[in-house]
Structure formats: structure tokens, C-alpha cells
Image 1 (cartoon, helix red, strand yellow):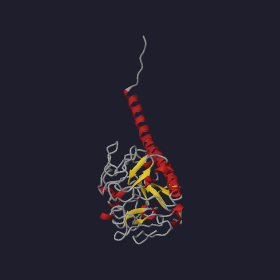
Image 2 (tube, rainbow, N blue to C red):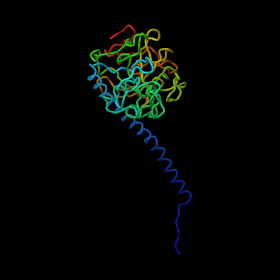
Image 3 (cartoon, rainbow, N blue to C red):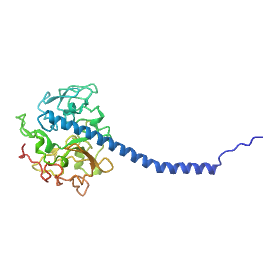
Image 4 (cartoon, rainbow, N blue to C red):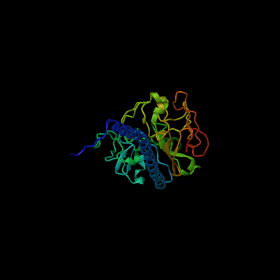
Length: 304
């Protein structure tokens, strides 16, 4: 007769306990590794964008790319980008020819034109991953983007006079104005106007939303730490709302400096100051944003 062997109940319980213990040990490590991989990929993307930033300046009279051209009417402003002609492209799309990757599958040159993904010309979604932080891959809307630009000091192309379509508030900015390129933020992870709200009140990202408290809202504009809430300028200037760097990579934000090197920083090291409720205040330090290594806030009377 052949004797059949099998695990006893106690042995099975022991094996299951060992496996559970291994899973408990490995899962956090795997999660951490995935987060680290996304952060490394994000830094790599920022370096590529940095090369595009430099090439754009070289090809356009040493002028920094504008944040986003002001809205004049349903046709203006538009510009040629990689892949076609686009209505009011953001800084990312504006320098896409220099990056060498079309940001949209079907760019449109008019505000209300519908593209092949059913988006209108002024609110298209990035389809090339390089323009979207890999930690938040669903933040694809060009307005509610994951990467924000130091527009106040490098290219605030809003109009100071709506009757004068060339009355840009702080653009064009020539590269020679930036005296400390290795210590001046150019592009960084941005949380949008949700920065003006305590963390517990920040709503989840919504692609085409205009809700002030949502993460990513107006994310393509990245405000510096120090902003005058009365006479200054901020992303949500009509409602006195500011954006801020987003510490989405293990409590640090990835950023690109003007000299094209990229690294990770805490929001505190970048100069942001939190209010007691966790919202980002207006009284931070602009030393790493002004371009001259001084804590100065951009004001409307400052002109190029």
C-alpha cells in the first residue's frame, strides 16, 4: 500500500503566516520603489523640458517662453507648435517644437473648435506623457496641468490693459535679466490654487474643473512664495488665490532650474510658508524665484 502525505492544518497556518509576513514587509518596499521610479522619471522629463526651454530662448531672441498668451477673442492668440497651430498654448505647448514632441494629437487654432478627443481648442488634454508628471498621470488638462511655470518672473503674458493686446504685464523677459540661473526656479510640480486651502479641504483633481479648491486648478501658473495679495499678481488673482509647489514625491517637489538642472526640494526650502491651518501663505521668501537671489515680490510697476 502507498502512504499519502499532506500538510497538516498547523503547517498550512504556519505557511500562510509566513507568506503574510513577507507580503507585509515587501509591499511597502515595492510601493516606495514605484514612487521613487516615478520621481526619477519626472526629473528626467524636467531635464528634457529644460533643453526645450533653452532652445526656445535661443530661437526667439533670448526671450523666455511666455506662460500663456492672453485671451483676446476666439481666434487670438494662436501659435505654431509641434503638430500644428494651437489656440493660446501654455508654456509647455509653446516650446514643444524645441522639445520635439507634439503635446496634442489634434491641436486647434480656435477657442471653440472641437478636436478628436471631444475637447475644445482652449482646454485640450496633453497626449504626450512628457508634459505630465508621472506621479499624477491623469492631470492632463493644459490649464489644470501638473507642471507649473515661474511666470511672474519669467513670462507673465497677461494684459495690463485689455484694450492694448501687447500690454503684457511682465513679458518678454530676456535671459540676461536672470543673474542667478542655477538658483532660479523655472518649472516645478504644482498643486494649483488648492494651495490656498487647508489640506483637508483640498478636493481631488478634476480634468476640466474651475473649482478653486481642486488640486491642479490653474496648475500651469506657479506662484512664487511671496505675493502681495493687494497689489501683486497670482494665478487666481480675481479671487486672491495662489498656487504653490506640490510635494507629491515623498513630501518633496521636483523642479527644473533656469540653468536646466533638476532636483527635488521641500516646499519650505523653496521659500513657501504654511499658515497654521496648512494652507500656503503669501509671505514666503522669493530668493530662489526672483532671478537675482533676492527676496523681492513681483509688482505691476516692475517692467522688463
